[in-house]
Image 1 (tube, rainbow, N blue to C red):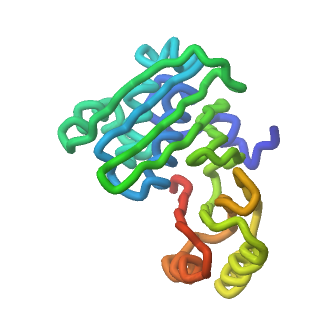
Image 2: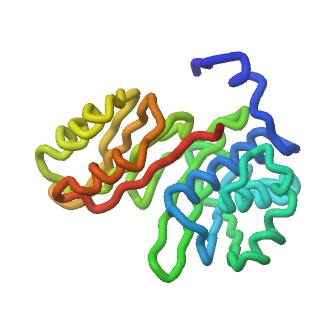
Length: 222
């Protein structure tokens, strides 16, 4: 693994006790919240592997809910997140699974309300760093460290070029990009990590491209 700075090795500024089980869990929850785009009515959280065995003792439960409430890893409200979630009307359900996963610190989060739902699978890989491995059933590899545009679209020719033209219009460079799809000609998910913050105007222009089904933005922690 390559590190960008010494702070990647030391780990994040955070409320403890564990960077993997607390900061990583909070960041996975926060990605789920950003993808959903609003406060959910229900949060169903499934822990796997080490998370499933130690989530209460290591605070992975309160950390994940804090992320879903859009708290940063260093927010002192993190330890009270379960009470705060109840106070604001978020129904939290914790589940554990013995299903084998590629990484022991894996969580699946499904957020929902009367208008829809969103689901991610995330892995805490150490030092507070995470990797998102699935979004709404689409397998992918997303770090959450850079501004990221997620574009759900019909699987047809010209879609990548159309989105790239919008990014060029806003002078936004692509750092990493991948496309995940289920069946050929059905739906596909374009994931684009970029070098600059993603503006509302850029999102609006992408949404206006024919055959675009939805656009979400993930922003890294400040």
